[in-house]
Image (cartoon, rainbow, N blue to C red):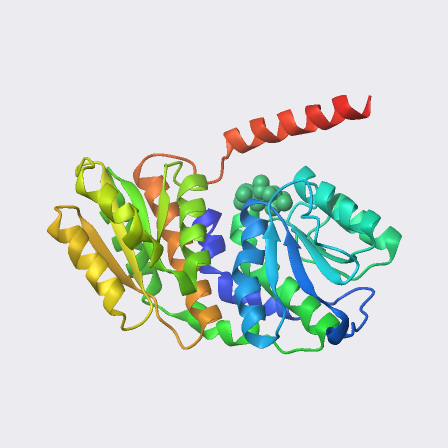
Length: 326
Ligand code: F6R
């Protein structure tokens, strides 16, 4: 199958290919001298930091943060590693933060399919991975995840095991699940409910429905939702929202949330996405929401490919930067 849905259906192959990619200018860092790891990136590239950050924290004792803006927090210094991820390699927020990292003497590395980020990395001879071109950034998630994880494996001398995700992306029932989810969401605004341990999946789901299906969407996280959102549910209009609960394991709080939302009179769909590890679960869930948001776009008569508003925003940022330089 071609088009955006075809790109999602092909994720297992995309991941396998990206796992064969090479790290340019690879060097091994002394883990003991590192204080933290910061990912720099926006949108479909920034979410790589959210997803991988938690996985890295499970493997090494290193705090991770993701910066989705033009500049870095003050505490990021030369004892930190900054990994810039930008599919196009030309996102100005990411380039701004990357250049600031270089100026501060932070250890830097990059992942992109081309653009300025690759050019600068070559010039500075810093470690980088160039992933395959030709995708929409959001459909390139397996390539970006594999590229970033290969880079970290080389630099930190650890094993992140992304290859274990290939099999979950071959699950033949996934398309059916995505179809059901898309049909459930017709006519409503999706609210995703996730436990904190897989929060990056909730974020990814929101972004996918924003960009592919062009619809407002929201993420609510357990246990925090039990202290605020849950009260909001009491008095909101029932007809325009659809709750989707991502269930990754037996969890009484999650089950309570699903049944309480139902009790209050909202439509709820529980999607079982649990696999044997965090990274498998989040990638499998990301695959489902990628396909479902593309199918919903089709059902709504919308082109999943176009993101006119992002282009308009990027044009304003570009003009702003140009005005600063002149
Ligand atoms: C578009 C998309 C966006 C981009 C974002 C940053 O498909 O997913 O969220 O990812 O605008 O651009 P890149 O990824 O090129 O740095």
